[in-house]
Length: 338
Image 1: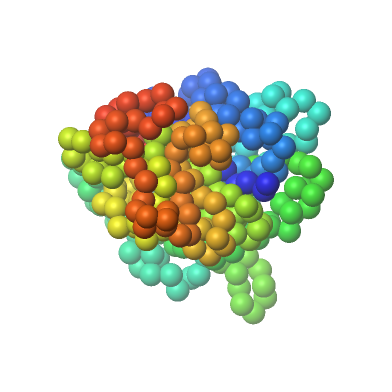
Image 2: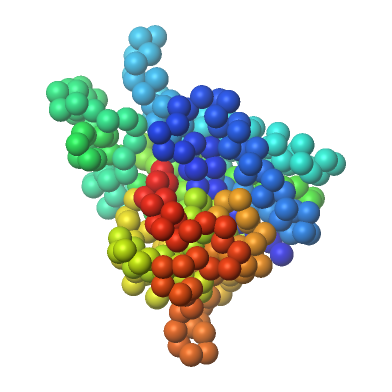
């Protein structure tokens, strides 16, 4: 089975943690165990990952560097995070899969310059800004900012992914038995010149889950696994009795009232992959990728409803068998992905 596994931001950093290398190494060590189980079970594996905290940190450092005339653009910073996170994942996987080739590929994601996202930047990046600081950066750097809680933060365009340039390379590596890390952070955003065919960097970030779904489609993957810090998607989000969803169709997922900044992109990516390919998509816990694939945990997304026409859910307010986490705890975690 060919699998694309998308790691959430919690694979490296959890909210409130310092972005120290040692902290990220510890989280990658845990994630690698779960990913290695998929390979040991005989599956081909492509891994994508988030980069939100890392690219935000690099952007802040670039802004503050007095040696630079202007800060590095976001496409270059995104490539830097791919290299950093890619090497952490590759080394851990090589240690867990001795004799197995592992390769991290700097990946470019093409976007449409006419995408409306370029006119309406909405993706938060970097830390919180005081009012005066935000207004200063808007004037000096041409930033756009928006309120995130009590403070302002920079917002950048987040266009839809159109194509992943390195798909032929990834196919070649998979054919050779390589575990591939690609599409990190949604890929380096690029725009193709229609006259010359050359790629040019875009000042944007691409949603990592949507890129994972597109990459899975372009690779003819059998399954897309979105690994995060919850055991399931939940119905009744925000209520006193959330209910873990075991199976659902794309339409049923899209009908749920879910947070735009955390679970909503994952649901959209899973739904889109299943609709476009008929393949299996699932959302579930980072520490049990094989269990998600086997259906013992996580929310499985199928193109058609169950025979009774209903999505399956555990009894309201309880966790499904094999979860290992209480439903209330999972609800609290739903908003903590970044």
